[in-house]
Image 1: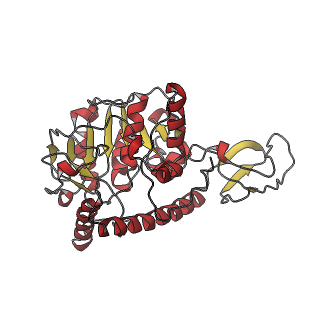
Image 2: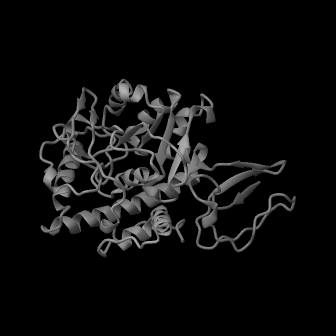
Image 3: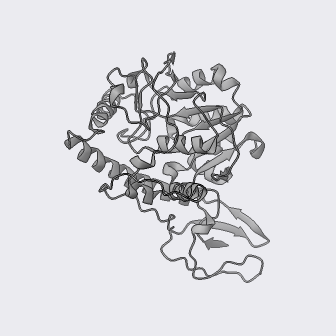
Amino acid sequence: MEVHVFRISSAFPFTSIRAKHSLNLSKSNFPISLNFSNIPKITFKVDSQKKNDVVFDEAAYEAERHRLDAEARKAMAETSEKETQNEEDPKAWKWVIRKRVWDLMEAQNIAQFPRPVHHRIPNFIGASLAANKLSELEEFKVAKCVKVNPDTPQKQVRFLTLNGGKQLLTPQPRLRTGFFSVLESSMLSPGTIKEACTSAGVAKYGRPIGLEEKIKVDLIVIGSVAVDPKTGARLGKGEGFAELEYGMLRYMGAIDDSTPIVTSVHDEQLVDDIPIDKLLIHDVPVDIICTPTRVIFTNTSIPKPQGIYWEKLSPEKLSQIRILRQLKSKIEQETGQKLPTGPSEKLPPTARRKFDRK
Protein backbone atom coordinates (compact mmCIF):
# COMPACT_ATOMS: atom_id res chain seq x y z
CA MET A 1 0.00 0.00 0.00
CA GLU A 2 1.20 3.52 -0.70
CA VAL A 3 0.47 6.54 1.41
CA HIS A 4 1.26 9.96 -0.04
CA VAL A 5 2.60 12.08 2.78
CA PHE A 6 5.18 14.76 3.44
CA ARG A 7 8.21 12.80 4.61
CA ILE A 8 8.82 12.47 8.33
CA SER A 9 12.59 12.31 8.80
CA SER A 10 15.65 14.27 9.73
CA ALA A 11 15.58 16.40 6.60
CA PHE A 12 12.11 17.85 6.95
CA PRO A 13 10.92 18.68 10.48
CA PHE A 14 7.50 17.27 11.22
CA THR A 15 6.67 20.42 13.16
CA SER A 16 6.46 22.37 9.91
CA ILE A 17 3.63 20.26 8.51
CA ARG A 18 0.18 21.78 8.37
CA ALA A 19 -2.33 19.02 7.86
CA LYS A 20 -6.05 19.16 7.26
CA HIS A 21 -6.42 15.61 8.50
CA SER A 22 -4.42 13.90 11.21
CA LEU A 23 -2.49 10.71 10.58
CA ASN A 24 -3.02 7.85 13.00
CA LEU A 25 -1.12 4.70 12.19
CA SER A 26 -2.15 3.02 15.42
CA LYS A 27 -5.51 2.02 13.94
CA SER A 28 -6.16 -0.40 11.13
CA ASN A 29 -8.30 1.93 9.08
CA PHE A 30 -6.45 1.60 5.79
CA PRO A 31 -6.44 3.08 3.24
CA ILE A 32 -5.83 6.51 4.78
CA SER A 33 -6.91 9.66 2.97
CA LEU A 34 -4.68 12.62 3.62
CA ASN A 35 -4.78 16.19 2.40
CA PHE A 36 -1.71 18.33 3.06
CA SER A 37 -2.23 21.77 1.59
CA ASN A 38 0.58 23.46 -0.28
CA ILE A 39 3.08 20.73 0.51
CA PRO A 40 4.69 18.56 -2.19
CA LYS A 41 3.80 14.92 -2.00
CA ILE A 42 6.53 12.39 -1.30
CA THR A 43 5.68 8.73 -1.45
CA PHE A 44 6.20 6.35 1.44
CA LYS A 45 5.50 2.65 1.33
CA VAL A 46 3.86 1.42 4.49
CA ASP A 47 3.66 -2.27 5.33
CA SER A 48 0.15 -2.84 6.68
CA GLN A 49 1.48 -5.70 8.76
CA LYS A 50 4.19 -3.49 10.25
CA LYS A 51 2.59 -0.11 10.42
CA ASN A 52 5.64 1.56 11.97
CA ASP A 53 7.89 0.62 9.04
CA VAL A 54 8.12 3.63 6.74
CA VAL A 55 10.33 3.29 3.68
CA PHE A 56 12.13 6.40 2.46
CA ASP A 57 11.31 7.20 -1.19
CA GLU A 58 14.66 8.36 -2.54
CA ALA A 59 13.37 9.13 -6.04
CA ALA A 60 10.77 11.56 -4.74
CA TYR A 61 13.25 13.17 -2.35
CA GLU A 62 15.87 13.63 -5.08
CA ALA A 63 13.36 15.04 -7.56
CA GLU A 64 12.31 17.71 -5.08
CA ARG A 65 15.91 18.45 -4.09
CA HIS A 66 16.99 18.90 -7.71
CA ARG A 67 14.05 21.17 -8.38
CA LEU A 68 14.86 23.42 -5.45
CA ASP A 69 18.57 23.41 -6.27
CA ALA A 70 17.87 24.48 -9.85
CA GLU A 71 15.76 27.38 -8.61
CA ALA A 72 18.50 28.37 -6.15
CA ARG A 73 21.18 28.34 -8.88
CA LYS A 74 18.98 30.51 -11.07
CA ALA A 75 18.64 32.95 -8.21
CA MET A 76 22.41 33.00 -7.70
CA ALA A 77 22.97 33.71 -11.38
CA GLU A 78 20.68 36.74 -11.07
CA THR A 79 22.50 37.84 -7.91
CA SER A 80 25.91 37.59 -9.58
CA GLU A 81 24.75 39.60 -12.57
CA LYS A 82 23.30 42.32 -10.36
CA GLU A 83 26.33 42.57 -8.08
CA THR A 84 28.88 42.37 -10.91
CA GLN A 85 27.25 45.28 -12.71
CA ASN A 86 27.54 47.43 -9.60
CA GLU A 87 31.23 48.38 -9.33
CA GLU A 88 30.68 49.74 -5.84
CA ASP A 89 29.29 46.45 -4.56
CA PRO A 90 31.85 45.00 -2.10
CA LYS A 91 31.25 41.51 -3.52
CA ALA A 92 31.56 42.34 -7.23
CA TRP A 93 35.22 41.30 -7.48
CA LYS A 94 34.40 37.86 -6.07
CA TRP A 95 32.08 37.10 -8.98
CA VAL A 96 34.81 38.01 -11.46
CA ILE A 97 37.15 35.40 -9.96
CA ARG A 98 34.43 32.78 -9.61
CA LYS A 99 33.35 33.16 -13.24
CA ARG A 100 36.95 32.93 -14.42
CA VAL A 101 37.47 29.66 -12.55
CA TRP A 102 34.12 28.19 -13.61
CA ASP A 103 34.78 29.12 -17.26
CA LEU A 104 38.29 27.62 -17.09
CA MET A 105 37.07 24.33 -15.66
CA GLU A 106 34.44 24.03 -18.35
CA ALA A 107 36.87 24.97 -21.12
CA GLN A 108 39.51 22.50 -19.94
CA ASN A 109 36.92 19.80 -19.24
CA ILE A 110 38.24 19.17 -15.74
CA ALA A 111 34.83 18.87 -14.12
CA GLN A 112 32.52 15.92 -13.65
CA PHE A 113 28.75 15.65 -13.25
CA PRO A 114 26.86 17.79 -12.38
CA ARG A 115 27.60 20.33 -15.09
CA PRO A 116 27.87 23.10 -15.97
CA VAL A 117 29.90 23.95 -12.88
CA HIS A 118 28.70 27.55 -12.72
CA HIS A 119 27.08 28.44 -9.41
CA ARG A 120 28.21 25.16 -7.89
CA ILE A 121 31.10 23.90 -5.81
CA PRO A 122 32.74 22.20 -8.82
CA ASN A 123 32.91 18.42 -8.84
CA PHE A 124 36.43 18.39 -10.17
CA ILE A 125 38.26 15.50 -11.81
CA GLY A 126 40.53 13.95 -9.21
CA ALA A 127 38.23 14.75 -6.27
CA SER A 128 38.76 11.26 -4.85
CA LEU A 129 42.54 11.64 -5.08
CA ALA A 130 42.35 14.92 -3.19
CA ALA A 131 40.08 13.26 -0.61
CA ASN A 132 42.60 10.46 -0.11
CA LYS A 133 45.36 13.01 0.50
CA LEU A 134 43.10 14.74 3.00
CA SER A 135 42.56 11.45 4.82
CA GLU A 136 46.32 11.08 5.24
CA LEU A 137 46.56 14.34 7.19
CA GLU A 138 47.37 13.95 10.86
CA GLU A 139 44.55 16.42 11.55
CA PHE A 140 42.12 13.98 9.94
CA LYS A 141 43.56 10.86 11.54
CA VAL A 142 43.18 12.18 15.11
CA ALA A 143 39.77 13.78 14.53
CA LYS A 144 36.80 12.06 16.14
CA CYS A 145 34.15 14.33 14.60
CA VAL A 146 34.53 15.87 11.13
CA LYS A 147 32.18 18.46 9.65
CA VAL A 148 32.01 18.06 5.86
CA ASN A 149 30.04 20.13 3.36
CA PRO A 150 27.29 18.29 1.43
CA ASP A 151 28.62 18.95 -2.08
CA THR A 152 29.47 16.21 -4.59
CA PRO A 153 33.28 16.72 -4.75
CA GLN A 154 33.52 16.05 -1.01
CA LYS A 155 31.50 12.82 -1.15
CA GLN A 156 34.66 10.71 -0.84
CA VAL A 157 35.69 12.72 2.23
CA ARG A 158 32.36 11.88 3.82
CA PHE A 159 32.86 8.21 2.98
CA LEU A 160 36.38 8.13 4.42
CA THR A 161 35.08 9.83 7.56
CA LEU A 162 32.39 7.23 8.16
CA ASN A 163 34.48 4.31 6.96
CA GLY A 164 37.18 5.37 9.40
CA GLY A 165 34.78 5.10 12.32
CA LYS A 166 34.51 8.85 12.79
CA GLN A 167 31.44 10.91 13.47
CA LEU A 168 30.27 12.85 10.41
CA LEU A 169 28.54 16.19 10.81
CA THR A 170 26.99 17.53 7.62
CA PRO A 171 24.58 20.43 7.04
CA GLN A 172 21.21 20.15 5.38
CA PRO A 173 21.71 21.54 1.83
CA ARG A 174 21.45 25.33 1.99
CA LEU A 175 20.12 24.88 5.54
CA ARG A 176 16.85 24.58 3.66
CA THR A 177 15.01 22.12 5.83
CA GLY A 178 16.97 22.04 9.05
CA PHE A 179 20.38 22.46 10.58
CA PHE A 180 22.92 19.63 10.73
CA SER A 181 22.70 15.86 10.65
CA VAL A 182 25.03 13.50 12.49
CA LEU A 183 26.01 10.11 11.13
CA GLU A 184 28.38 7.48 12.45
CA SER A 185 29.32 4.00 11.34
CA SER A 186 27.54 2.42 14.30
CA MET A 187 24.27 3.73 12.84
CA LEU A 188 24.95 2.04 9.51
CA SER A 189 25.63 -1.35 8.01
CA PRO A 190 28.75 -1.83 5.84
CA GLY A 191 26.48 -1.87 2.81
CA THR A 192 24.84 1.48 3.55
CA ILE A 193 27.90 3.64 4.28
CA LYS A 194 28.28 4.75 0.66
CA GLU A 195 24.60 5.56 0.42
CA ALA A 196 24.80 7.58 3.65
CA CYS A 197 27.37 9.85 1.99
CA THR A 198 24.79 11.20 -0.47
CA SER A 199 22.24 13.92 0.20
CA ALA A 200 19.40 11.41 0.16
CA GLY A 201 21.39 9.06 2.36
CA VAL A 202 21.91 11.76 4.96
CA ALA A 203 18.17 12.43 4.98
CA LYS A 204 17.48 8.71 5.29
CA TYR A 205 20.03 7.71 7.93
CA GLY A 206 21.17 10.90 9.66
CA ARG A 207 20.20 12.05 13.13
CA PRO A 208 19.16 15.70 13.11
CA ILE A 209 20.65 17.98 15.74
CA GLY A 210 19.65 21.40 16.99
CA LEU A 211 21.37 24.41 18.50
CA GLU A 212 21.33 22.79 21.93
CA GLU A 213 23.44 19.79 20.85
CA LYS A 214 26.65 19.34 22.80
CA ILE A 215 29.18 18.41 20.18
CA LYS A 216 32.88 19.01 19.53
CA VAL A 217 34.03 19.25 15.93
CA ASP A 218 37.70 18.41 15.47
CA LEU A 219 38.07 19.21 11.77
CA ILE A 220 36.12 21.22 9.21
CA VAL A 221 36.14 20.29 5.52
CA ILE A 222 34.78 22.99 3.26
CA GLY A 223 34.14 23.22 -0.48
CA SER A 224 35.59 26.03 -2.58
CA VAL A 225 35.39 27.60 -6.00
CA ALA A 226 38.75 29.35 -5.67
CA VAL A 227 41.42 29.46 -2.98
CA ASP A 228 44.76 31.25 -2.60
CA PRO A 229 47.49 28.84 -1.43
CA LYS A 230 49.68 31.67 -0.12
CA THR A 231 47.10 33.34 2.12
CA GLY A 232 44.36 30.78 2.69
CA ALA A 233 41.75 33.19 1.31
CA ARG A 234 38.80 31.27 -0.10
CA LEU A 235 35.75 31.89 -2.24
CA GLY A 236 32.67 29.67 -2.17
CA LYS A 237 29.87 29.71 -4.71
CA GLY A 238 28.43 32.92 -3.27
CA GLU A 239 25.48 31.94 -1.12
CA GLY A 240 27.30 32.34 2.20
CA PHE A 241 26.09 29.14 3.82
CA ALA A 242 29.57 27.92 4.75
CA GLU A 243 30.05 31.14 6.70
CA LEU A 244 26.67 30.83 8.40
CA GLU A 245 27.35 27.21 9.34
CA TYR A 246 30.74 28.18 10.74
CA GLY A 247 29.25 31.04 12.74
CA MET A 248 26.55 28.84 14.24
CA LEU A 249 29.06 26.18 15.23
CA ARG A 250 31.09 28.91 16.95
CA TYR A 251 28.00 29.94 18.88
CA MET A 252 27.41 26.33 19.94
CA GLY A 253 30.97 26.07 21.23
CA ALA A 254 31.61 23.18 18.83
CA ILE A 255 34.64 24.88 17.27
CA ASP A 256 37.14 27.64 18.01
CA ASP A 257 40.08 29.40 16.36
CA SER A 258 42.22 26.28 16.68
CA THR A 259 39.83 24.03 14.73
CA PRO A 260 41.59 23.27 11.41
CA ILE A 261 39.75 24.15 8.20
CA VAL A 262 40.59 22.12 5.09
CA THR A 263 39.40 22.44 1.51
CA SER A 264 39.80 20.05 -1.41
CA VAL A 265 40.03 21.53 -4.92
CA HIS A 266 41.56 20.96 -8.34
CA ASP A 267 44.97 22.52 -8.93
CA GLU A 268 43.37 24.85 -11.47
CA GLN A 269 41.20 26.29 -8.69
CA LEU A 270 44.29 27.73 -7.00
CA VAL A 271 44.48 31.48 -7.60
CA ASP A 272 46.75 34.32 -6.52
CA ASP A 273 44.51 37.36 -6.85
CA ILE A 274 42.10 37.23 -3.92
CA PRO A 275 42.66 40.60 -2.19
CA ILE A 276 42.64 39.84 1.53
CA ASP A 277 42.04 43.50 2.33
CA LYS A 278 38.68 43.21 0.57
CA LEU A 279 37.54 40.10 2.39
CA LEU A 280 34.50 40.54 4.60
CA ILE A 281 34.60 39.89 8.35
CA HIS A 282 32.57 36.69 8.01
CA ASP A 283 34.68 35.15 5.20
CA VAL A 284 36.20 31.83 6.30
CA PRO A 285 39.89 31.22 5.45
CA VAL A 286 41.43 27.75 5.15
CA ASP A 287 44.44 26.28 6.91
CA ILE A 288 45.09 23.38 4.54
CA ILE A 289 44.43 22.79 0.83
CA CYS A 290 44.34 19.31 -0.68
CA THR A 291 44.49 18.89 -4.46
CA PRO A 292 44.89 15.69 -6.48
CA THR A 293 48.64 16.33 -6.60
CA ARG A 294 49.65 18.02 -3.34
CA VAL A 295 48.90 19.21 0.17
CA ILE A 296 49.42 22.89 1.00
CA PHE A 297 49.60 24.37 4.50
CA THR A 298 48.64 28.01 4.09
CA ASN A 299 49.69 29.26 7.55
CA THR A 300 46.89 31.77 7.06
CA SER A 301 46.96 34.98 9.06
CA ILE A 302 43.38 35.88 8.12
CA PRO A 303 41.24 36.05 11.28
CA LYS A 304 38.54 33.44 11.54
CA PRO A 305 34.96 34.61 12.11
CA GLN A 306 33.88 34.68 15.74
CA GLY A 307 30.21 33.94 15.14
CA ILE A 308 27.24 35.30 13.22
CA TYR A 309 27.60 38.97 12.31
CA TRP A 310 23.97 39.96 12.59
CA GLU A 311 24.63 43.52 11.48
CA LYS A 312 25.71 42.12 8.09
CA LEU A 313 22.71 39.81 7.69
CA SER A 314 19.81 41.32 5.77
CA PRO A 315 16.21 40.78 6.89
CA GLU A 316 15.56 39.10 3.54
CA LYS A 317 18.34 36.55 4.06
CA LEU A 318 17.23 35.95 7.62
CA SER A 319 13.68 35.30 6.48
CA GLN A 320 14.84 32.45 4.26
CA ILE A 321 16.53 30.36 6.95
CA ARG A 322 14.48 29.15 9.89
CA ILE A 323 17.44 27.94 11.97
CA LEU A 324 18.94 31.45 11.85
CA ARG A 325 15.72 32.98 13.07
CA GLN A 326 15.62 30.45 15.89
CA LEU A 327 19.20 31.30 16.86
CA LYS A 328 18.51 35.03 16.77
CA SER A 329 15.44 34.59 18.95
CA LYS A 330 17.36 32.36 21.36
CA ILE A 331 20.18 34.86 21.79
CA GLU A 332 17.75 37.75 22.27
CA GLN A 333 15.87 35.79 24.93
CA GLU A 334 19.08 34.86 26.72
CA THR A 335 20.54 38.37 26.68
CA GLY A 336 17.33 40.38 26.90
CA GLN A 337 18.65 42.58 24.10
CA LYS A 338 17.56 43.02 20.51
CA LEU A 339 20.19 41.96 17.99
CA PRO A 340 20.97 44.28 15.07
CA THR A 341 20.07 43.42 11.50
CA GLY A 342 21.86 44.32 8.32
CA PRO A 343 20.59 46.70 5.65
CA SER A 344 17.68 45.54 3.58
CA GLU A 345 18.46 44.23 0.14
CA LYS A 346 16.28 43.31 -2.75
CA LEU A 347 17.05 39.66 -3.28
CA PRO A 348 16.26 37.92 -6.55
CA PRO A 349 13.53 35.27 -6.51
CA THR A 350 14.72 32.23 -4.57
CA ALA A 351 13.67 28.64 -4.35
CA ARG A 352 10.40 28.52 -2.44
CA ARG A 353 11.04 27.34 1.07
CA LYS A 354 7.92 25.20 1.14
CA PHE A 355 9.04 23.54 4.32
CA ASP A 356 9.89 26.78 6.10
CA ARG A 357 6.67 28.39 7.22
CA LYS A 358 7.59 29.89 10.57
